[in-house]
Image 1 (cartoon, one colour):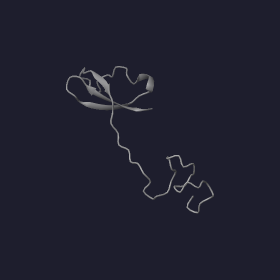
Image 2: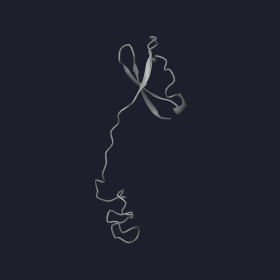
Image 3: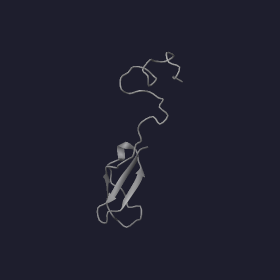
Length: 79
């Protein structure tokens, strides 16, 4: 199940909930029982790119499985 982020319309408190995709935009009951209304917001996330070791699959269209682009078994650096 995906993790969604919601914000309270009254005080700005943010909460995260694991919910099925079909219920992502459905109303959220106040987990604190205070009767507040929470609406879904777009979450931000962090991603780290690159290959720290210098090895891995190239996504630049070289056609190989090694950074050199020679392909599986053709380079001593592959696997």
